[in-house]
Image (cartoon, rainbow, N blue to C red; front, side, top):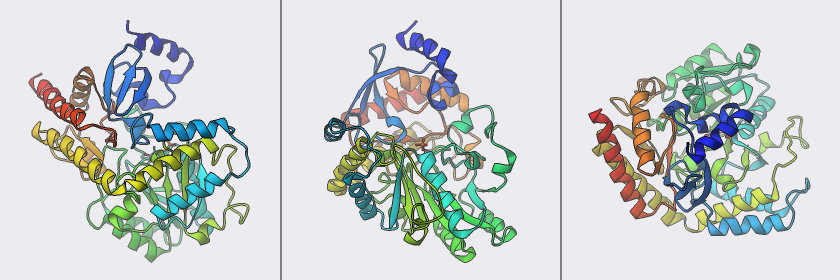
Length: 424
Ligand SMILES: *Cc1c(COP(=O)(O)O)cnc(C)c1O
């Protein structure tokens, strides 16, 4: 028995599936999760002393790699001065300014603790302002695990037995209308059947929780136009795309301005921190200025804001190089999959190989993937020291810490791992 297996058995006695978030359990690939003891740069090390090149990168936050010196220093210094006060601190405003400079639509914002909270609160703000109850989301998009959003959701919901969650009353979900990604017609149909009732459309501007599915030309623009026509808000869930597909996220990369947006992952630099905000007139309705309530004991936590601020500042100062380099490295990985005959979707440093005939353009396409082939590929990669997401329905995350030598090794391993299972 390996040390990871022993630790997993212990963990499983006390935590459902031995983990604190379902996809970590490796169930989709029928394996035992590796217990991680340390990370540095683009590498992680497990409890059995094995070393991996990491493409999970904590599912997105670590765009600068593990334990980046400047970020760790900022965190340690902040911690020395006190872990939390429940009173305002200056760094919260500094972080807010940094976000607003990157994302001009973030006129006012709130810091929260998780992406789940950020999207939930953005939707509450949209409902509070418009006085409408219904919302539109897309099949296969994941916006965290709040009740009304666990409807046709992506990420771990796709690998589990049930597509949606037990414990969500039908009455909570009935205000959530579901449209098809990359199909503005499906959104228009919902608007015309629910005139004056839809508060907002929430979308991952690059879908990354059903594997990566890029927005087709005109899709995001189409959503913008429909929201304007029907007086609803467009909410970008940039929890993955923010500060990743461009410094200003998907809004910058695709040139579409949302009314409200949610950020997480990178914005917290590896600490629990997320953000929602947007139009000033909407955010001025949040308590204590207005009637929309939202609060948090640890919101704007000094240690988390230090990590986020250090991360965003490093990204901004090196913006010209960082994003071009991320793009180049990810393009090499993309090429390796193509060479191996595996279709792949990529937007910037986000990519997914798909074990199906053609690179998916919709959730329906994604569902044609061969999950057994994925599991074999995953096993082959892990054996070669490549740590990719243990599910077909997640993205690969490339970071600034991935070295050219490691990218080259991964490219060779991709070809070898894919060739191996094709022979099976
Ligand atoms: C991860 C994710 C969330 C949820 O964030 P948590 O911090 O896990 O609550 C929401 N939306 C998207 C697009 C995500 O990828």
